Length: 536
Ligand code: DC
Image 1 (cartoon, rainbow, N blue to C red):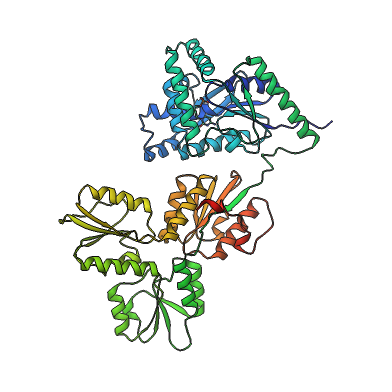
Image 2: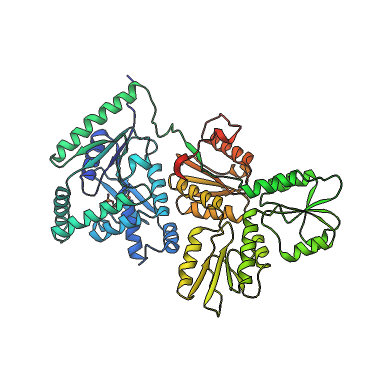
């Protein structure tokens, strides 16, 4: 006879639907380990309460997570929850902690930590996990998935009785309202919300006794275990297939493609060819051009009687004059969107407006822009204070790779001070599209790999946005993947900045495929699965 398979059983459902009791009793009957995942979020909530931490403040939540150690042991008749070595099993069961647990569980960095713990505990199988997202997110490969539902009134009565037995006094209406509010919050959060997996079996417990619920789930689970044994299929969660997807609009934008094309077509035989600064923020391409005979000059005055390629970020007015004076031939690869911003700036300066440029002062695009302004033209970086401007009118433009939300935020702030604002949305569409696609993929992935130069501001912006939703690795090339362990991830996203070549995206994809145990390779970007073609 084949040995019985140790499968993963996922029991999800709203608060007080009877999941805990059912999961506990089912685990006992099967001889499995029971894991109460909600207790983990409750332990986080208790720690936040003890440290008087505002859970809206990510800057204090992240360090708090580093300070806490949560362990769960199965005592046979329930779990014991250990928070930094202290048994907090009772203290986490108050209505106040329930509400905070729900709120804290919506914070992505909290979820990653708890989901990691849960996956580690369950990965060998032989477990019954109960929660909200076990079948959809923690173990989408679980062999048996149940989603328990029950009328709100029934659940409220159940919870009211439970609290009374623990000596916690409350009134029925408050309990009912608390459950309703919490379910709504759990079901509407963006990351791993409460919902049945498509292949979950719905169990309505409104008119069932505990014994009936357990028996029903037990019978179905035994059949699933038997079938898994007969088919001799291993634990699906340990022989998992990793989903690796690429975000739309990854890699080269139009301006960068054009600049590279112009550089590659440059005639290097008659005159020395230079780029003023790196053509694009990508070490691989810079090396390639160097091999082709195109060198980097860091100062316009160094270049004489040569050919100069102006990179897509553009240069300053002064640099342009120097290059001309020194008899250089100029190949102007400034991105047309950046050129358009130069023109807008010159026009509004002519009209007498003070101008605020949303962008990084050190970035060559912004330095170039500033040179077309006057003493009333200022650059302002993300979250920097607004410079003192005496006039009541102001014009605003942005570096082409800025985040639209940052421009919106700035405009809202300025509205309080200025009676006339002229706003030019100079952010290029490709940037907005790439950022939106990255965020969507990050929300649907366990981890993201963002490819592009570490000095590339648009790539850094992508990495920053992605890291809000999942662990994010900003890498320049496939070699940096060597030390990365991807074994805990089931869905991986890839995105790339505007200066990342397709070949690098392909290389990274192939290495990730290999790491996931799939030894096929792709040779073109079209072969890489894209995330939601229709999304942008
Ligand atoms: O199951 P519980 O009532 O102890 O859970 C407390 C909160 O924790 C719940 O309102 C939402 C959150 N939770 C979650 O987000 N995901 C889980 N797998 C379990 C609980």
